[in-house]
Amino acid sequence: VVYSLATMLLVLLQLFVLNYIHVGGIVPFLPPMLVGAAASYEGSRASPVYALVFGLLCDLALTGAGVPAGFFTFVFTLAALFASLLAENLFSPGFLCSLMSVTVCYLMTALGRCAVYLHRGTASPAAVLLMAAKEYLVTLPCLIVVFLLFRQVHRRTTVDY
Image (cartoon, rainbow, N blue to C red):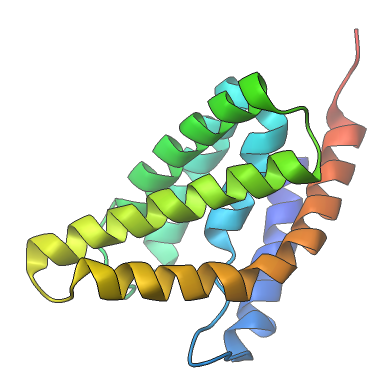
């Protein structure tokens, strides 16, 4: 519940601030960052559940995003599982762990988009990957806000035994 409230705040940031920022024609896109940040803290059990629900909501809200129905649900769930497994085994929770998890989520989202556009024959994979790299770099400064907010949520909701 607390993660959903934090996510709602960040989605409002996307809607009312970030959607109006254009850097080189690219708008920052927070959803993969939210999935990655949650995966860095919540591990391979809880983060895929968060990603599944958040992906479903993204699929419902972003119907004109140029991807098929269920795209975000599938890609975010898979990305959260993979990122959380890497985070659990290679890093301890922190900024570098979040950066790695977010990077994995953006990469998997980009590869998913490549597969969609390649299947449709509407764009070259190189063009899609270049746009995804620009989107990642434009959105990356937002990681500070996302990281700090999710770290607070994790600290307030985690019980140490």
